[in-house]
Amino acid sequence: MAALALVGAVGVMAFGWPLLADSASGLAHSK
Image (cartoon, rainbow, N blue to C red; front, side, top):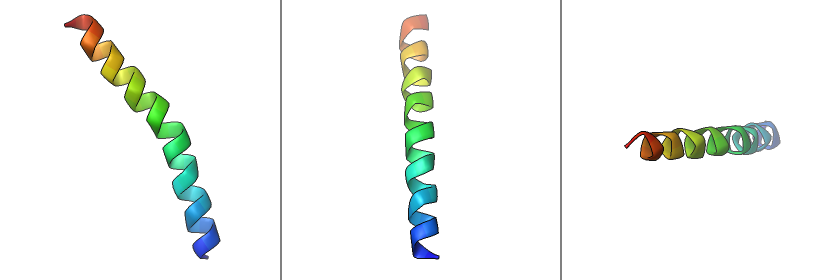
């Protein structure tokens, strides 16, 4: 169960970080 949660967290980080960075760069670019 803990291993599954860890894998899920890593997946969210791997998927969410580029999305967040892209959003931040887009916001900075529009400004």
